[in-house]
Length: 269
Image (cartoon, rainbow, N blue to C red):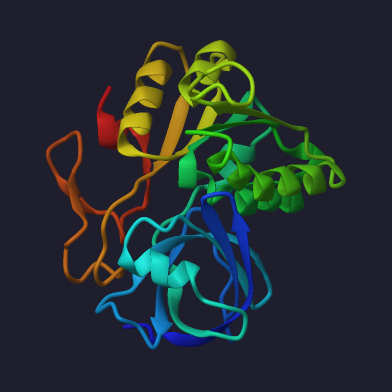
């Protein structure tokens, strides 16, 4: 089993209702967008670490976008610069960058709430790996209110930086309470923009993911990959605590076979 590494917080940046935590992790091995790490404060009041998507990385500096929704994530969000935490990762299976970036059709990123977390890294990896040769990228983000929507800032930064590398990328944001434009969900944006042959990278709540798949199933030639949310314990596939049932009746461990799955694996045809 892979050993944990003791990291150190180098920045704690509030972004509306979430926090972008930047951590120096000695010996960090580069993640693929969609992979995650188990994080646990040192010392911690919680028995287990929390699974958090890798949001961005620069060498040994790794960024995580965290929503304080429980004891573990609130503890992580409260860590100040210089605080220590245990890091186990990168873990799991991420998005297939080459499949998303190939220069035919479009890549459409769809995210809701804290589900925006993996996409600054995905946009940057597509730009750095393919640049102007990559497919056009459309980023659709959805949030509950204007406060939560501040978590779009890391994605905006990645989109702006990607343009300098030749990536053709456009971003739209929907806010459900109407505090920033029309009251819409991210699936409303997807309904308007989805085209035959599009390839989707999706992350967000289960209800949103199912709604995205229903939209996809009505459009010809669409492929979609979903980064699923699940409560995890070990993070490496040993405890089976995050197992889900796939469309064919088989079981899969979100931490090991996922968290990224093909839509048909999860939802069926």
